[in-house]
Structures are given as structure tokens and as C-alpha cells.
Image (tube, rainbow, N blue to C red; front, side):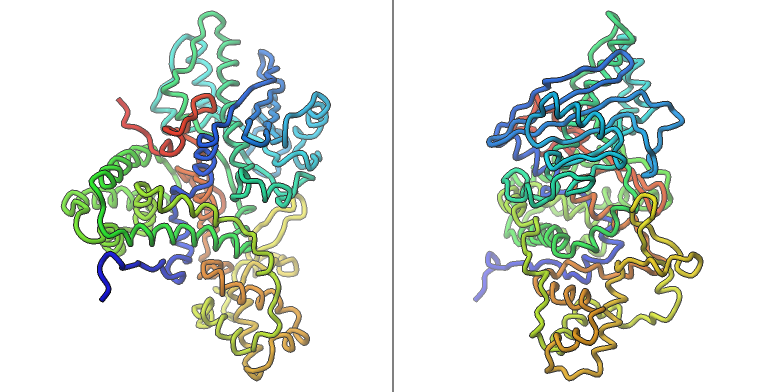
Length: 562
């Protein structure tokens, strides 16, 4: 007879998890890539240095920040510029920025820095080499930048409320990696322990960029105020994160990488299932949850947005916070399987935003159950890309029904279901989405509508003998190879497919952006439209010289201000 202690809660159904509205409500968690990196750097006792800081009184020059790990070093090479205000733009078509960066694989020589100085400030117009792991740029948040410089120059501390509400002095407008513009391919670093998890090089670049920005604003204040200038309070400095502006270019990523995205979502879902399966929570675990919950509420009070979508979601989340507080006070999280009861309650009591916030939060007391799943989040399954031509047609049909059954019920001849089309812009080679029936873009459409394509092959297969191998079908219809591949991938990647129409009239690309950014560890999502969003990264994190095992993880949750 099964006892309660043996009960294992299954992972949530992909049909529930992979809806766009839910993906667009995800929050950072213990498995977020930024927190993985800071935990590793503290655990391995990384050291940091600033061998170069050659910046003049106008804030123009070069700096190098080097992170020394157990086996190798990585260096951020930063170039600060004097950007006229009229040239400051977060759009991808911009051609000048306040600062530009490259993450160098190792420690750069003077010749390397000279080479990079001729290319990195040009960004897309320049070229880097495979010794560079990422290329990025950033612009100042002008109002807060000027406020902090002026305050420090006058011997005063900046207004902490402004810092809490803006959250950053500079925001990146792109952090390019994985071979773009000549940078190193992912394969070059995929087998290194410190960069095997997804986006670790990019997260390290942003971590070091944040330190450069802090040092630059202090340098500018010192230059302006001279002897009168004061140093930024070390209790205020951590709440200066790095902003980011992200647009449509990121959205197709989760469509193009079904195995990789599955691994991210599956790791999180497995973590949630493991915690829900815990038979009873100790007093220490309950206290840990309560403390983190209290701290997280502070962060949410700093979360501002002027976009109707996020205003509505924030209102729902704030109501959810009170509901969670009331539930925890009444229930006490005692008794059998308290986390499972809490999650089941949330499914009817909270908004999707609140449900996913809570799902992330229950992981916090259980580092031993959760953190090891980080090793499962990369995509090392090259074999999944190979089509199994011997698979019977009937099996392929079953797989399509399993992942795209919802799409088989839609009328794809209706304009509302195929109103949009994804294409790549000629000027910047960036993904874009347009109106299929209003713009001349259909000839340039990209294959980012897997549901529509799955329905098309399903119809073609209806007249085929189910026992025939799918290879015979593909010999006559090679245009459907990608759909067969994706269907077969669902055998090992149940969370690889979005269970919504990515070209429908009501699609909100913002949901795709948020899904990816939440796994980075982003907070304070601030949509500027349904197609681009500003976020904050590393707000609250220790700076390199402060990083310890004690502060390397829960920095994302602010301490209660005194």
C-alpha cells in the first residue's frame, strides 16, 4: 500500500504550461541563468581585477575587467563614448551608443584591445573574432544618470526611491553571442564547466558591465565635483542593476530551439514537481519561504509600468500577494504535502501571473532538490535533429495530435488565424512580424508557425497508409521535413512546442520575450508595446569584490529597507 511519503506529484501538463499567456507570466527562479552564475563564481572562489581604466574627465576611454575562474579567465573590454543626446536610441537601427563591450576569452593584450577599439564601437558594422564570446552595447538612463552624478559630485547620496523605481544607470540594447559578427560559436565553450549551462558567457558580460557602469558614474562624479565629491553608499549601489531593451529579435528563439527551450521549462517543471512532492515542510523551510516571500513583495512595490497589459497584470499580482499572505497565515504550511496544497489552491485563487510567481517562490527553501537540475538545461542532444525515417506514418500522426491537437480544431483558411507573418528585415537582418494581408511580406515568411505547418502535414498524411515509413512520404513532400522533425522531437521534449498560434491576429509577441527573459533571471518587466520590453538584470546582486557564498543567491530579493 502506498504511503503519503511515497506520493510523487507529476510535472504539469504541457498543454497548460505552454500556453503563451502563461509563458508570458513566468518569473525568475533558482534555476535562472544569472543566479546559476553567481552561485558558481562564489562556490569556486572566482577573483576579479580591473587591469585597465583609462577614462578621461568627459567619460570617454577604455576599461578592462577580468574574471579569474579555476581554469581560465574572461575579460570584459569596455569602451565609453561621448554620445550626443540626439543619437541615443534603444532601437536596433541605432549606430552609436554610450558604451560598447566585448567579452574576451582570456586576458587581452594591448594589440587585442587596439583591434577591438576599431570594431567593437561599430557593433554590427565591425567584426570580432572567435576570441570574443559576446558583443554588446548600452545607453544611459539619462535622468537617473545625471541625478546620481550631480548628487555624488555635490557630496550627497542619490535619492534611493528613484534608484528603486528605475533600477539601472545603463541599459543594454543587445548582447550578441554564439557566432554573431564573427564571435566564437557556442560549440567553442559548450564543454567548459563554467559555460556549459545556457547563456553563461552573456550573463558574465552583463555582470561585469554593471561593475563598469558603477565605476564610470563614480569617475564622472569625481571629475565634476573634485574634492567635494563623495563615494556612492555601498548600501545603495547594489540596487543599481543593468537594464535591457529587448524587441522582436528575441521572440522566434524559443520557436527555433524546441529542444533547448524544452530543457529550460522541463527543469523548472521538475523542480516544481519535486517541491510539491515534499511530504512535510520543516519549520526552517517554512520560515525560509516566509522570509523570501516578504522580501519579494518589496521588489514588486518597485515594479512600474505604463503599458496597459502590464498594469493589469501588476494589479492582479498585488491582489494575489494579499491572497497568498492570507492563505499562508491560515494554513501555516503544516500537515501533509503543504506545497502541493498551496499550488492546487493557487490554480483557482490566483491569476496566471500570481500562480507562476508562487511556483517560482516555493523552490527557494529547497536548493538541494532544485539546483542540480541546472545541469540539464543545455541542449547537447544533436541526435534529436535527425529524422527517424523508419517511423510509421501512423506514429507521426499520433505525435502531431499530441502536440498540436488544439491546432487541428482551428479553421486555417480564416484570416484571423493567419493574420500575421514573420520575416527578417533586410537592413538589420532582425526578425520582424507584419500583417500578412496588409503588407507585401508573405514571400519572405519565415517558418515560425509550427502549428499551422503541423496541420498542413497532418492533412497531407490523411491519405497515406499508416504502416508506411514516413521517409516515403518525405521523398514526395520534402517541404514537410521540418514538421516531421518537430513532431518526433516531442517524444523527448514535451515542453518544446508553444500550444498557441504564433501568427494569429491576437498573438502577443511580448509573451515570448518574457518567457525567455525570465529564465535569464530578469525582473521588473516593463513593456513599451506588445513587441518590446525593458527589464532589469542583477539589481540587488553583490559586486565582484563583495561576492561570497552567503550573498550569491538570494540577492534578487531585497532586504527590508530600514
